[in-house]
Image (cartoon, rainbow, N blue to C red):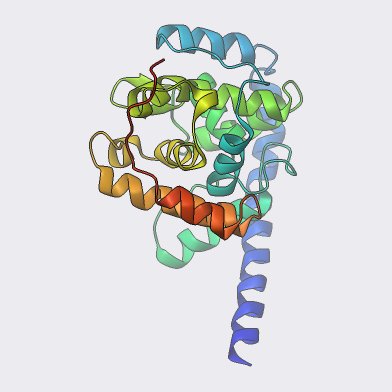
Length: 244
């Protein structure tokens, strides 16, 4: 009885939070749609950013399926359903922050994180958050989901002065990206949210815990079985592969 009640209350609060977020952002978004860039040059921007970081831009068919699944599971579970903005995730973040009097959860999608880096100089605070949301909607009209994922994984920070999962695969596992294991893909997906904390070359214990969280989410989202996750959790955090 109490569980049903608490679930119902949470559902109502979440719905209210979504409605408030939509009401507050609606007029500004209509204006920003006109004022913000069209998004058609997003791929050129990604390539320019990658060149500045000496990183390689992955093609949309070069992202290993298990890596994409790991990223979706831990960062953006409705990635393949939304159009740039996850209203459910945003509403949940607004509710959490309002309840806890903090700016703890951003509710950003993978598309928004890509936009933040290539259009907004890495900032999604304040007014930039509204720009981020509008630009994410525009980018989703230009790029496929597979290319968005590839671009995001090409430019994301993966350690101190390191960008992109290709470089991270070489640094952590001395192996090409397509040849990694499930555990290694899960670790890569987990590092991206806080590379200074989860970088396995700096803090292998934190990296191991984060990998476990990613694998648990992959099980919850039915991407892998519990048996597969357990085997991946048993892998060493760092390995010496055949080289890149």
